[in-house]
Image (cartoon, rainbow, N blue to C red; front, side, top):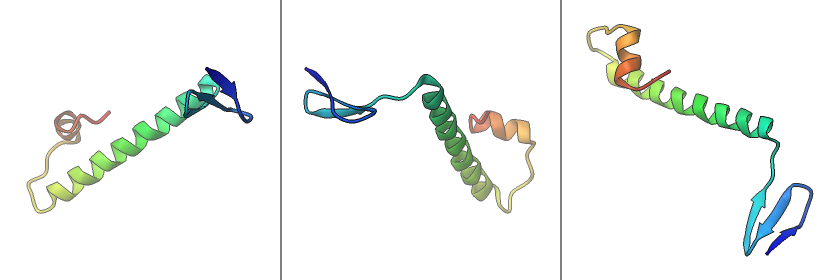
Length: 66
C-alpha cells in the first residue's frame, strides 16, 4: 500500500520514501561522487608522503580517480 504523508514523503508499507525530481537526484549523486573522490585523494596524499613522486595520471589509474 502506498500513501502520501507529506509534500515529498510517501510510505510504502512501513518504510518512508522521499520523492525528488530527477535533476535534484542527479545533483545529489554528483555531490556524493565528488566527496568519494576527495576521500580517495586524501588517502592517496597521506599514503604518498615521504615517497618518490609519481605522476598524477598513474595515481588516478591506481586509485580509480576520475
